[in-house]
Image (cartoon, rainbow, N blue to C red; front, top):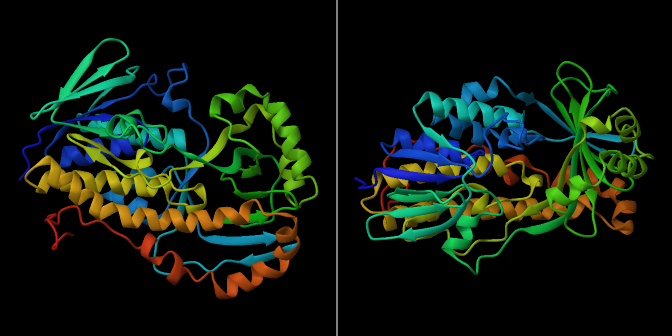
Length: 407
């Protein structure tokens, strides 16, 4: 049994509240500390983060371990059919049998549901506290924040995203995020596509990739991956007027059907600008002393994987199991890395291969109408490519043991 009784969780996005909930169920009191203002504060808080993300079946299964699966699926849209569009061709993609559908959910709504669930279980949140330094001893860890305050616990969990300060404190030489060559945008168009509800279409336009699905209540939600020459932070991307971005998107997708109609019937006021889409290369060190990483701070695959949020949720749950069952912090963190590293790096590698198809060169664009149908018939076998990802279910109650009996 562990001697860990308290934890500081740095980051209140997705992995942070799930980690706090899982730690709570493991008998460890967790406090979530977030650099930004609280949700719906109107001051740029985390609740103001827009856009939509996908939760794969394994991610929803992991939420079941903290009692949040039903609340999340209630606010999500199920995707029951996937279609690939290349020019005028529409090709049904094979779906994995025997698993629940992919769920798409508004990021801000997911934050709200996870936050509310954690608060209902007595978990404390502290907002507007930006981490600047950490001091470790044999018995605990003390975090110092920009406002001059401090907080102490037995362990510190870095759930602070792809630009994680905790990662830099664990390993100052750790790699940072890498640009995928794509910029992300999203909106809801007034145009109604000819597709039944629950159908997601992945479209390769003449100059860029985009996806779309009918939005419950009307219109069509779309996301675009616009090829970019250089990475732009979220702040940089949002200094460009939304109207200017929309003009660029209309020019890029103006020769595509329904891309042209989607862009033409979207409003600049509703355009979500995500900036550069980035991934984390393999992070050598996930922990040091009493500090450990979880979620995007340790592993952030491309959005092409459809697994980023789901893997973050899984890791939060697995970390809590390891801290619950192993006798000391070091053995718990080592078991956690053994449980997670191979899995997340396989997903990241698969997503990186997909990324190359999203920003093809002129020759590849010419050949794509011929190659895609062949790939669908030969290489896109869901049992071979994603079954091990989507059928993954964590048994939270099963004890974690040290190698070689690690479970």
